[in-house]
Image (cartoon, rainbow, N blue to C red; front, side, top):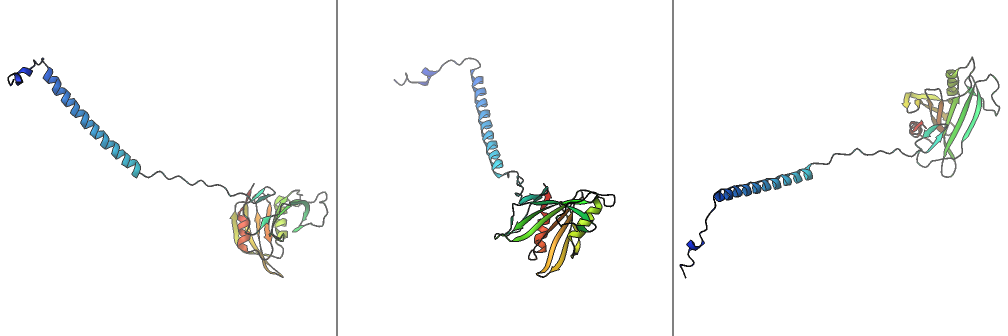
Length: 224
């Protein structure tokens, strides 16, 4: 029995080149295992890089604040807390003479300089008038009063009894001046704006309004 199971009974003839093919197969499998290990390492490193590398920062999307309203083609972008825009709009045409807006109910006559005056009012919750924005736009001119002259007359009329505080400053619609006067209720402020095309914008109201509030309203005005 032991002779029947001797190793010599299992000796098979080996074809030429078989051993070489086996060796090549072993080397090929070793290379594949190395490539697989390297690939796994690279994938792991890539995953770590993706996890660690910060996402690019995205610029915040800024949306324009909703407009409070509009007056004569100008956007009202700010109203002091506690005030709302009255839905009514006042607009009329007035004659303009030297440093005076003729506001007696009459229509401008032939050959008179004139201006379109449009007003919006911001009121308290109880309906009391508090702040007004008046836009005075030169309309008709004369040989004696060109557009620049009409603008100057409108500015002088708007600031009667008031003095300028500090220097002029820029706002989105043009050049502004802070004005101050005295009333029976105490000091009163207003901001007067002159645009590049000669329009005059008066931001004023009750004496209780502060210079900072009026300046914020003036700075919030822009072309519609």
